[in-house]
Length: 89
Image: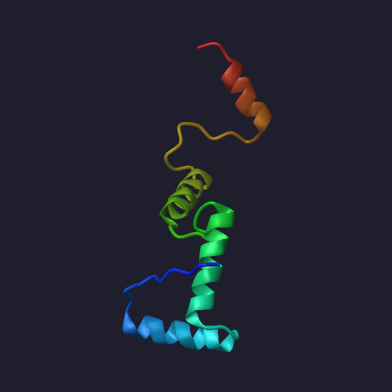
């Protein structure tokens, strides 16, 4: 199998901390990056959550609904909701 080089610029402290972590896990930086790349290809994307703003926004909206904020009506049950949906205006 042919190999290729990748040059990546990272913060010096991040590199040192990552090298220590990977050493503790019994691998080097190259092996860890290869694992990441293989998992990304298999997953067809980043194999972990990178961005949590959407999750935080969803959490805020759920909290608003539970507190009765930013909703036009609050229903005590699905039956009440369905009754309201089926009611003529």
